[in-house]
Image 1 (spheres, one colour):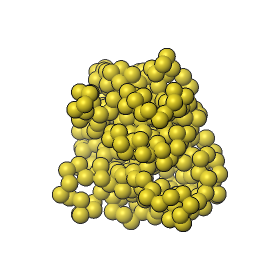
Image 2 (cartoon, one colour):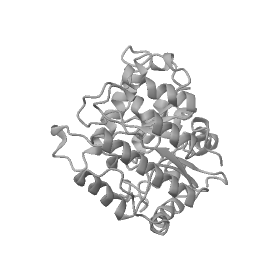
Image 3 (cartoon, rainbow, N blue to C red):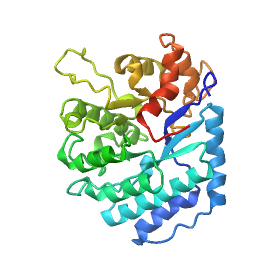
Image 4 (tube, rainbow, N blue to C red):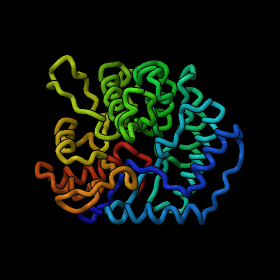
Length: 327
């Protein structure tokens, strides 16, 4: 809660028992899609207790949970990818059913870099929203991890954009693994790939006609969009359109100086609260002794934000973008 109001966290990832990842490895290594996942509700519930404690400790009331991006394995062959996306989404739906007051579902799509376009994602996307009650879906801008997929401004993505509008749900841009050999020396180099691909996606969306073609499309880019614009808004290097109704960013960055700069540059109305907790934000802030993903007190301490601004970030903006989330 924040000042007695419900806090909605748009950036969360599913927590699962060890058997979930083991199942993934087995279906890939043995080439056996169609096998039944043997994970009980009790095992799922035990895994959620740690997750819920993280949320409680950080005063997060409702969290939108999607796949762990590093476990989406979008580089797999399509027939494996489709089975894995369906399996993952079914588990997310089971977690939401266990705690419907705390979680909402975000879909994993069976993306594949060798597909002609994104039409192969549409049946699962529709199933997740219409049958499982999900409130949005993840979009990996580089599913193959090899920089070979068309940019997010190209027609390759248009079937997915059209369906997102028809279903009235946002897409959340969240990259995954990379095979960029230049980054091999960096531990957890997928984190660097995250903000590289997010920044590129932002530039492509703001320098193209995507939102002219799809004026009702809503896209949220994780981690404050990956990087900041270094040019002033009137410079030709910056997209000149009005994207205030289409393009949003979550607050899932842990350096307070970067977060402050991102809020100032993007604008309060474009920022949605996100923590990715439990996730990669476990480092302790030396000045407070608290985990870096405990972001409510960080945002609350930003002195240029009014109380109304903070409530926009914590609740109003997430509900404005993710309209199917009810609290």
